[in-house]
Amino acid sequence: MARIETVQLVDDLDGAAADETVAFTLDGKQFEIDLNAANAATLRDKLAPFVSAARTAGGGRRVRRREAAAGAGSSEARRHNQAVRVWARENGYSVSERGRIPAEVVEAYRDHNSSTSPSAPEKAAPTTRPQPAQFSG
Image (cartoon, rainbow, N blue to C red; front, side):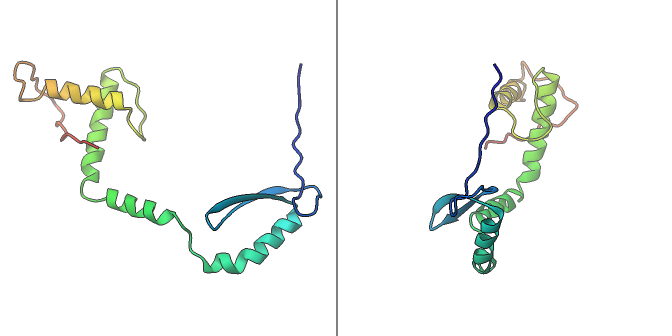
């Protein structure tokens, strides 16, 4: 049996049909209100002087963290991640070109490198690509 459900928004101020849900935060509390186009425009117009004088919150820390991450260690981390991706593909793991590398892949890569490092001469094998520095974190 097919079923179609319709959600109809009702303006929280005047009870007419609403066109949108407006979300906002005030004093640390998050609010949502269903409004028709005219009431939504009125809300935005009334808040406009305050919004234009305000600063956005929360984004600053993230930006600073990213700037810090772009420091001296980032090119080393990129080389390490690229080496892990190459090794993973050569060894049957599925990894994306970008984004986080699954922990089990990184662990397998580290296990492989620790077993083929110069400190374990019985298993050491020459390689054509440089071995990356170990990266933790």
